Amino acid sequence: MTQDQQTMQNIKCQILDLWTDLIGENLNNDEYLTLLKEIFFQYFDITNSEYLYLGKGMYFPVSVDAENGNITNGIPFAVLEPYFHQQYQFPNAFISILKEKYDFADDAILLRDANQKPFGIIILQKTERWRDFATTKHIHDFVVLISSVIQLIQKNYKANYEKKLNKELVRMTGIFHSSMDIDRILKAVLQGVSSAFPTFKSKLILSNDQDRHLTVDTHMFDYMSERTSTIEAFVSGDMTIEQATDLKCRLLNAPIKGRQGIYAVLQIFAPYDYVFVKREKDFIKHIAQTSGNALENAKLYHQSHRLVSDLQLINETSHRLNMKLNQEEMLVFLAKQLTKSFSPNETCFVLKGHDEYQVTTGSTAFFFGNSCEPYLKHVTDHFERSTDPLFVADFSNLVDDKVAFMSMMAIPIIIREKVHGFSIVLHNKPYFFSFDSFKLMQSLIRHSSLAISNTILREQLQEMVDRDHLTKLFARKYLDRYVEMSMDKDESGVFVLMDIDNFKMVNDTYGHQTGDAILVTIARHLTEMVQGKGICARWGGEEIAVYLPNQTFVESIDLVGKIIASIPKVTVPSVTVSSGVAVWHKELQANFQSVFQNADIALYEAKNNGKNQFRLFQTDDVTS
Image (cartoon, rainbow, N blue to C red; front, side, top):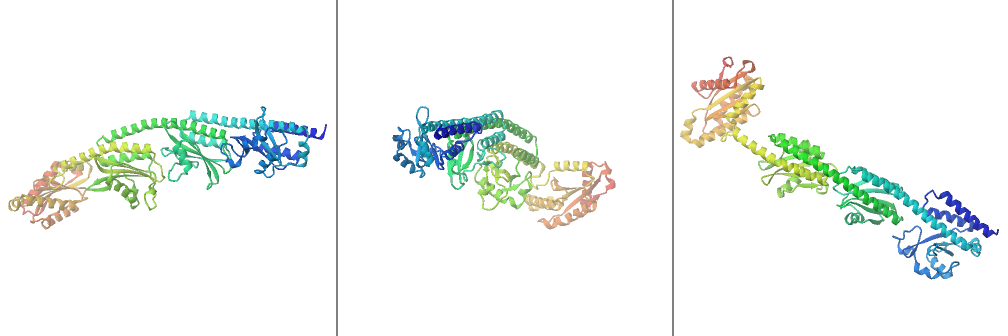
């Protein structure tokens, strides 16, 4: 056996051993071809070589994807084709074309498939050992062997790679079709990409209507800050690839879409010079499409449950608000519903009173301090101009000053087609509230507005019943109920009955309008003096009653004395009053009718003893 025959035999054995040893290793094309280059070096001392493969009418180096490769990276097939009728060796004109791209090119091997169609070229640097071997008859067998091996390498790599991708697709598809957990689906997408491209980073950009707790690898889509290629993928629904110079990477954006919309963009960060081949793009597109359908199904599933839950919440709220709650009870209940439904950091109710907006019951402590001013001012200014609700994803974009809370929803409380107030919820994270939450809050406040309106009207009507129209003091019936309840729960009380002296003469002399003005003046004066100690009521005509629960005898007598002395000073024309005072204690088992009667008796005494004074009905005389 000659040396050339032995060399050929050794190469065949080594390639066979190489193939046998590495067939299960799933090496890529570059790794296999590196091993072949070692064979070139071992047997022919060749240190420089390059493999070009045919794709889209161009010969590209194996490191370049034909689908995305720049034309400057390749050599047109048409330029080289005139020389392909030869087997080996190629003329200098052919080598010169290769040398324009590869300065080490001294020789070339044309690779052909079983049908003699060219599929690749190996460019070589000539060495003495190669020249000797290339002039033998074994060169033809060597070219056939290398062509076959490279075809097997490509087929094996493609089969193994597709097997890996298909296995991952099957696993992920199983998760997508078996789960209605949106978080699990998103996690499966990122894990699948990580498994297929273990050295690449990836993340998900979620659309704004996703109600997710964001993790390190998931972010919310923001038109103001996203890259142009990401926005293009989100808007068009087509995959985009960007050579991101600033990030020093190649960025792939794959839209995750269902039948009704695009729910996210999958971003994959590859090395700057990496090129995604067609099967990798198909794999990513399949992940995006399958996960998009799964997300859509899960979203619709959760939406249906949320709608049922929302309807139950609205029904529960409406039912509770129609139970004749007062305004304070109603707002406290609404605050609890808003907290339960939206998990805000802060909650506020503002109602208009005397043409001014006032923070009311149900609001958190934050809205009773100065820090709330930017939010209240922004919302108040808005509702002065419009009845449209407010949905703010990032409040910091609307003000110059630094603020603590970014997400805000503000819904007007509309009564008789006018803004009577509004409700605000805040959260410190931007984009915290979903659009579904915004719609639900609108429904809650809209249903509540009618109940609040009814409560206001009911309280206004009750106010008309409980208050005297002229003096604005409590009416006698209200006083009766108040004293009766006090005698049930309190330990003692003082009832004071007052009568304006010579009031008929005042009316006859100055007119009834002056008489009414005096009544109003005395009512206002009494209210100021009694404030926080008891209540004042119009007993009838020129008679006014004061009731002081749980006041000491000395304090009550002192107050009545001050009232008697001060009324001539505050009235014009000056008038005086006479008063009867009755005291009750728990142990005496008195009732409110007897207390009224005792005060009336004491008042009669004061009138008969010169007026402008008070008399006390002695406690020992009180009877049941």
